[in-house]
Each structure stands twice: as C-alpha cells, then as structure tokens.
Image (cartoon, rainbow, N blue to C red; front, side):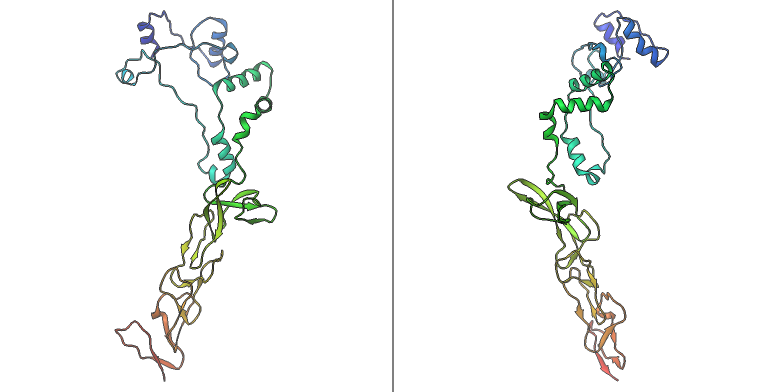
Length: 284
C-alpha cells in the first residue's frame, strides 16, 4: 500500500511480487538482490545483515491525509507479562522491568544461534557470561518488597521489621497489613498484625478493617474480631470490647449487634419504657 507512492515520489523503479509460500519468500532475498519486507527482531534474514530503506521521518499529518511518502511510525518493542505476575512472582516482575536489551545485542545472539547451530539456552548463557556488568544491576534486592508484601526471615520462618535479618519478601498473611518502611538502605514494606479493634480476612492487604458491629478485639494481633459473648452486645464498629447487657437481661445468640437483642433472663419481665432504647427488667 505504501511502497507505490514512495516509489513514485522518489523515482524508484519497483515491481511488486508475492511469494507463493513462506518458504519461497525466504528463498528470494537470498538468491536475488531485491527489496523485501522484514521486521526485527527476527532471524529469517539475520545472517544477510540487510540494509534498511531510509525515508524521511514519519509525518503523522501526512499519513492522516493518505500521503505515505514518509517512513511509517516506529513500533516499540515492549515486554508483555501476565497482569498478576507482580503479585504472584514480584522478583521476576522486577527483573523483567529492569532488563534492557538493545536491538544490536538481540541480533548478535540470533546470528550466533544460526551460524554456530546453538540452542536458545546456549546463546543466552554465552551472553550472560560475557555481559555480567550489564545484567547484575537488573537483579532485584531481596529485601526490596512490593506493597502487599513484607520483610521475611527464612531462618526463623517469621516476618520481621529488621532488614538486617530479612532474607526475602513474602505476601502478608490474613490478619496483617503491609506497611511502608524506610531505613538507611531505602524504602521497603513490612507486615504488621492488625491493631486492636481491626481485622483483615485477606492476604496481601495494605490496611485492616474495623471490627464489624457485634464483635470486638482488645489487642493487636492477627486474630479475627471475636463475636460478643452471651450477655453482651456491640452496636459500634471498631470496638475494643463488647458492652454488657442491662442487669437482668442477656442475649440468646453470640455476636449481638443491638441492645434490643438483650432479653429478660428466666424469672424476670421487661419493664422498659416503650420509647426508651434502654432495657430494664424486674423479677417476677
């Protein structure tokens, strides 16, 4: 589509042809001195080291007007990874983000692969051996944790807030939150137990949730908020302890959320004011 106006604009004698098959397409440039369509990185014609046809730089407006006499817009070579890789394998994700390969390095590896009949693994290994200074900075620090993770000590099999004893990062467990942490080595994250009055049922969380009504938690821990015991209720969220039912009343179930759930004990009757939220009982 674009080569015809380019040939006319720059007085290039070109005759278009289409190969009968992919194998024929690979044969033609190796037999005849001709222009052909190719993309990089690719090893189909890598050993020929073909020259690129250089045109004036891409002009977006000209192309929008169907004027294709400038070069096509460059397509970036990008890294593609599963969207959950960062959560499932954060170190691999960091390695991929930091790695940088220029096209020349990739071309040289493909040339070695074809000319020396090497496997991909052998070519990659040779490149790693010869470019240590280049790839070493790509290796992520073991204690540079992502949000949702925290410093972990494999020796004691516990989370730690001390980078000196940490060996890796792990996702914070249920009952914990991932908290930003900074020391002389920079920023990272640590896992802490949820504070009193809060809980977290999921893993890798950045915050804890207030205890729901009908429950309470008195101390910082990884435990869930406990339902109020018999004779108690809690009508507020984030409570440290449950409220006692009025004298002479109790509850029929655990985790009562309202004072109205406090009923008379056996041998007593309700003498509360109908317009009052408080519960009063009297012996029979």
